[in-house]
Amino acid sequence: MPLGIKPIIDFAFKKIFGSPENESALIGLLNATLASKHPIVSVEILNPFSYQEFQQEKLVVLDVRCRDAEGRYFNVEMQASSVVGLLSRLVYYACDLYTDQMRLGDSYQFLNSAISICFSNKIVFTDTDQAHHDFELVDTASGRVLENSVGIHLVEMPKYNLPEETVSQSSKLEQWIFLLTRAQDFDATTLRRLLPGIEFGKAINVIEVISLRSEDKQMYDQREKAQRDFEWSLTTARQEGYELGVAAGVEQGIEKGIEKGIEKGIEKGIEKGRQEGELIGQVMLLEYLLGIPQSNRDELLLIEKENLQAMVTDLRRRLRNRNT
Image 1 (cartoon, helix red, strand yellow):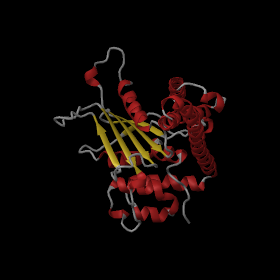
Image 2 (image 1 turned 90 degrees about the vertical axis):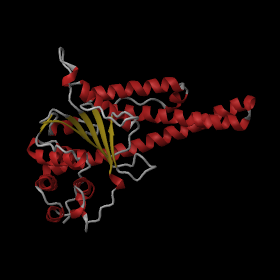
Image 3 (image 1 turned 30 degrees about the vertical axis):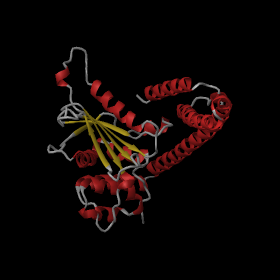
């Protein structure tokens, strides 16, 4: 019987890779992603899994922060939904990990690498089939890389096509993608046969435990519902904000078009409305995620674009501060 547990759900992901007793699973995932000449042999999880964080947290919690034996810092996250500003957020997380190492009196020369790793269940770059992106600080002329600095790995999971029949011959990263996206479709015995190895065995054991233990399964079901609600609110906020913004933009464009040419005015008005509509959608979504009263949509339509952007910036700051 299929396990029915999706590792991309925050509770499952964090329990698999954020539990100290499952260190080998996290190490396996990191080594498969980094493909370094110097594999990671041990890690210290800085924000370990706890039931309390899921009982109290309304938002989707999907990051695992850790440090390896060489002192490198990692932030590993599963991004199950499409989020505005994802790439900027990954840069922010990597820089935050980097600068947070400094203490009063420390020397810059002792800073270690900080790497942000994101497994996205949505396609980010639609203009390429490349699925694994490795960003570093590099000199565009010489190709020289700044060592011991910041880096970002983005893995677009929907771009992988991994048949069951050949997954055992695939790369380690492809095998992890298979587990993350297909574990719910198989029983534990089949998964262990398809994905041999201690690191996969640890992960499969956790998935099996979640499917069997009532406490874990109850929390998993609760978090899966929360993720569905999040997706719904994201889609609704974007659509409503877009439609309202475009409608307002058309109206404003027509008024200005009387003086500057109706056709050109409408075109500019639609573009202006689209941009403001997206900002309105972001404001509504961020307010929902913060659990604060949502602004009236009609009132938001009256706010200038610059002020809407300022609202988005402030709400994002409040959201980051709440999650630290």
